[in-house]
Every structure is written in C-alpha cells, then in structure tokens.
Image 1 (cartoon, rainbow, N blue to C red):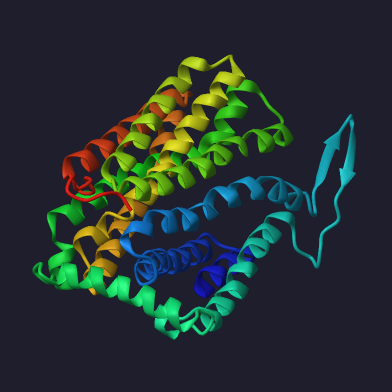
Image 2 (image 1 turned 90 degrees about the vertical axis):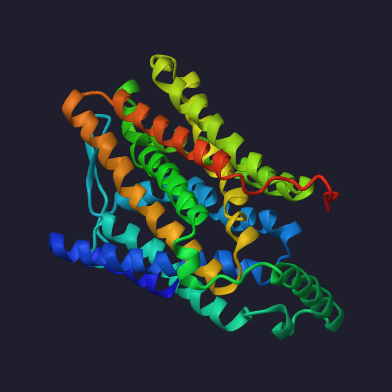
Amino acid sequence: MITWGFAAALTAFVKTPWQFYVARFLLGLGEAGFFPGVIVYLTHWFPQRDRSRAISLFLIATPVAQIVSPKISNALLKIGTNLQVNGGFIHYPGLFGLKGWQWVYIYWGVPAVLLGFIVLFLLTDRPRDAAWLTAEEREALEQQLETEKAQRAGRRRMTLVDALRHPKVLLLAAAYFCSTSANYGLEFFLPSILQRWYALELDAITWLVILPPCLALASQLFVGWNADRTGERRLHAVVPVFLAVIGLGLAPMTRGHLPLTIACFMLAFAGIKAYQPAFWSLPSLFLADIAAAGSIGLINSIGNLGGFLGPAMLGGVEKSTGSFVGGIYYLVLSLLACGTIIAWVGLGRRDPRTKPP
C-alpha cells in the first residue's frame, strides 16, 4: 500500500514519457504485492464458510472509489485551467504551482500511504496475536482455522513450483486475464463511449458513470453473502460473468436510447465485479500457505496483462473503424471465454453431503 501510494502520488511530477513509464511500473509492483497479499491474508482470519463475504467486503472498495472519485477528480482537474461557461471564461487558479491533473494523482496517492502505516501497526498477522479479540474469540477462531487446515493435510502438499504450473491455476489465470481485459476496457472507455454516442458534457458524464458502480457494489455483497450461505462457488462466479456478456452485448443495440444504454452498462459492470468474491475463493479450495499465495499472485499478474490488452484493443478498433462497436464485441468475447473457463474448471461445486453453514 505504501509503495503503491508513493508511486501514484509521484506520478504528478513526471515530465517525460519514460518517467511516466517508470512510475506506472512501480505502481504495478505495488499492486502485484498488495492484492494477492490481501486475499491470502483473509484466509488467515476467515474460515471457508465466511470467506466469500470477507472477500466481497474487501472488493467493494473498488466500486465505492468509482462512485466517489468522478466528481472529486472532475473538481480537481479544474485547478489551473480556464473553462468556457455561458460564453465567458472562468479562471481556476493553480495551487502551489501545480495543475489539476497533478493534484488528482497526489490526492489519490497520499491516503494509501497513510493507511498503509496504520494497517502496519494496527493489524496482526493472525487472530492469536490480536489484542482486540477476547481470549475466547481468539481460541474459537484459531480452532476453526486449524480444523480446516487439518482437513487439507490429507491431500498432497504442493510446493510453490507445483502450484504455479498446476493446470487449474493456469486456467484460472486465463479466466482472470479475459475478465480483466473486459473490465479495464469498459472502465477506461465508458466515458468516451457515452460522449461519442450522446454528445454529453463532462459534468453529465461524471454523474452517469457513477451508476454502474452502484449496482456493482450491491451485486458483489449479494454474491459474497449467497455463496457462503449456500456453500457453492462455481455458479456464483459463472452466472454473473454471463449476465455481463448479455449486458455488454446488447449495449451497442441501444444507441440512441440513453436509459437503455446505461442499464446495459450497469448490468455489464455489475456482472464483471460480482463474480470476483466467488472467483477469488477458488484457489484456496485446493491450495494453502505459500502455494496459495504464489498462485494468487500469478493469477493476478497474468490477469493484469489483460488490463493492457482490453483498452488497447478497444482503442485500436475505434481508431481504425471510427466506432466502438467492434471493440465492445471483443470485450464480450473475452467475458464469454472467462465464464466458459471457470465453468469447465469445475472448482467450487457444493458438496451434496454437507449442509450449508
């Protein structure tokens, strides 16, 4: 978190393309450690029956940020600029010699650094070290986690190398690559698509792009809760992805009808986000300890490469054809591949011999 926040804030001071590339590379290193670290960290605190809900509560930080950030970023971007309003110009003075785009990076980077130090000193590695739990709570939680660990002990213990080359790990990495490709493509280009299709002003767009994350937040919480309630993970990952396929696939057909377009993008956005709590609980079903940490890191790293491909394909298709439609259908195919892979892997089926918790 601290590295991530520093890299984000220091991006405000880049002056050349290569400085920008270095800053983004450091940002990627920060995320590469942070995200899988959190997923594994949650396995040290939450038993399997509660894990999807715990992951969903962690993941809703993304839609919450996407709900909060457009209006704040829009206001910050005005610093040091001249905007034409009703035929006249309004000057927004600079702040400490910095322009609005620089303050956007600083504003979003500093909290991560501060919170990183807070987490470092207030959170403990495992429940047995937590002074803010009672002795009975620590004992009960540790006992539950040790019981699950003992149940896995009968299986062949995997080394990190075994995990990284395990077919199911590689398939999950491919599935996440496909979903991240669609996720980043949609997130990066949704404002541009709305502006192109409906000639909207920036202030109007910042209100509209808040709506998809609102539905995504609710859907992530529901999937996390219901996956734990039923003890089923596979369909809770697959069904949201296919709902996203439907929403995104129908979006180009709604051009000219703004409410329908927004509804389709809301469904697509919600599906892409909602599958994640169940998806990230899958690796810990057959891996533990360092094997789980390494495999989750691999899945996340390979998946984030899709974060380059999706926007690049969407932007490239738009540049060559003058339309976003072809690129949108590429994202649809990526999501279709993601859902198919997760369904085929077969992890997370509910055991009919056990009752849901």
